[in-house]
Amino acid sequence: MAEEASLPSNECPVARTLEAIGDRWSLMIIREAFDDVRRFSEFQKNLGVARNILTSRLKALVATGVFDVAPASDGSAYKEYVLTDKGRAIFPVVISMRQWGERYLFAPQEARSVLVDNASGQPLKPLVVLSSSGQPLGAADCHRVRVSVADA
Image 1 (spheres, one colour):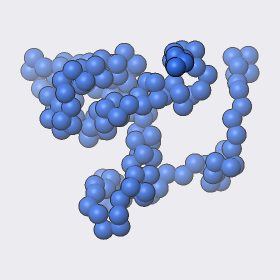
Image 2 (cartoon, rainbow, N blue to C red):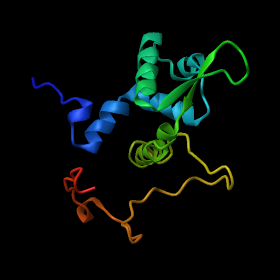
Image 3 (cartoon, rainbow, N blue to C red):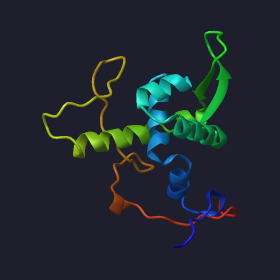
């Protein structure tokens, strides 16, 4: 079996993103952080994940720059995992996955959680990919091009 390309040498942004945050537990930890979970014990309790897996994922997410480790906000001896700007930028990815799951993985009357806007109390509108001029785009409306450092 061929060895996977390492993160720094892979030219595909999707591959690099999956390498950095693409496993189930990493994404679930990030989702919990968007719900203001910050402590190891809270992540473990909410997710039911084994300590060794949680330790490994949090360590990797800190190394990738998704989380910073900070002293507990309440002054206790605990440490907290706080999303960085890089981590908060994952929010649309999590929302996109959530909306896809809501649309395709639940029966019409099946119970589920729904993310609502704090200000209006209404569910979020579906995310839409827009062109530079603001027009909605589908997969057939886009293509990949390789950009080198000299092109940027």
